[in-house]
Amino acid sequence: MRRAVDLTLYLVTDRELSRGRPLEDVVLAAVRGGATLVQLREKHTGTRDFVALARALRARLEPLKIPLIINDRVDVALASGAAGVHIGQRDMAYPDARRLMGPGAIIGLSVETPEQAAEAARLDVDYLGVSPVFSTPTKTDTTTEWGIEGLANLARVSPHPLVAIGGINATNARAVAAAGAAGIAVVSAICAAVDPEAAARELRVLFGK
Image (cartoon, rainbow, N blue to C red; front, side, top):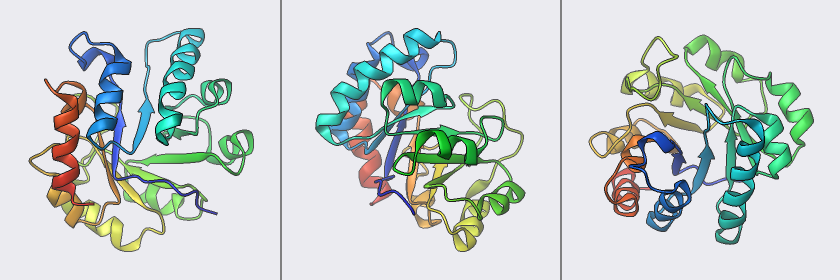
């Protein structure tokens, strides 16, 4: 069973890129501009602070009907009441995450190689994060790029919706859409923008969905 979720413009947060602005302000500006999903990524935050931040952000996003997804941490997602979790190849295994999160939670899985994507085809994940499509300084733990051709090849055979992540910005959003992605995951193109709302709006137009 696939959970209904609009993957079109998937904001991944990064406080270090946010020009010293409160994270909540950047997120809400992006939502006003058209972000459809928010992933809270906190690599260097303690668990208690992570949970508190997630709860505060969820309280602002729920009235707007924008799901909050937690990066990596199933425990934080459960404690904060988030809509779901995004896991990588070195995080908790999908069957365990699904058992803990329950059938209604949104769960996405990163795939970095065609072999990983093939293995994921048998899983009941809600989407695959194709990572990275292009090289990016915000994604340093992967070794290969999918590129537009690799993304298009996967889109032709994958049973899951694909979210493209890694170096996605206004210069390539249209090409990513044409390759068959269901959505684009964006970090610096929104978080580091002078005007996150305008940046999100431009990306929505360019992606064309």
